[in-house]
Length: 226
Image 1 (tube, rainbow, N blue to C red):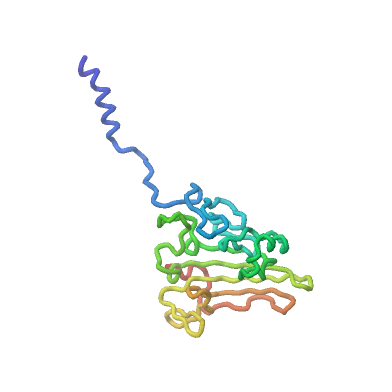
Image 2 (tube, rainbow, N blue to C red):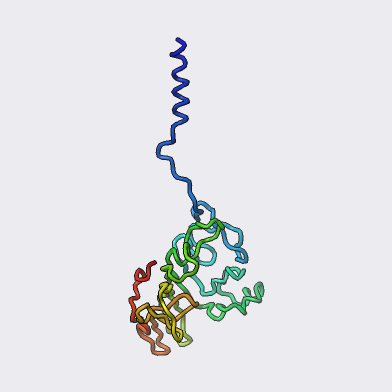
């Protein structure tokens, strides 16, 4: 009788000591979906968790997408621009000196990959990662697209689209243009670590129709993967 009563107790202890089956490994990164990544200091929404969908400014960080006014000035501490110049400047007079203010009526669609701006925090600072695993964007494989459009004074509409890529680690720059290791032109320098590889402009007011730049080097986004 003694043994019979002890067996269930011993079996329970044995089961407790066994490793859990199908246990999930401990997560070593923070995500937007779990409310663990926040807007940075100085941002209009500083300290708030980044939402999974579109925010007030038109950013969908989870989806690597932005759509809204070119005055996406949240990072400078300003609220979203909603089209009323007088009311906006009455509350935010210093916005008039923001670089993007002259383009407030321009609409912008941006897309990017994880190397450009991740939707995770893997280095533990609770902010979205940029060029994670690399000391700079160079060699990271980052890319971004810009599609802008607006109305001309004559009532016609203009459109502009470009591709921007982080240059590879073995690229060289000469006279403001990036080149591959074998001297093939990647594109004009932008922001010191990137090249514009492709541009299309359609603007009836100035006679632009179609591609205005197409780099001799391949312009596909996957070409400069690390």
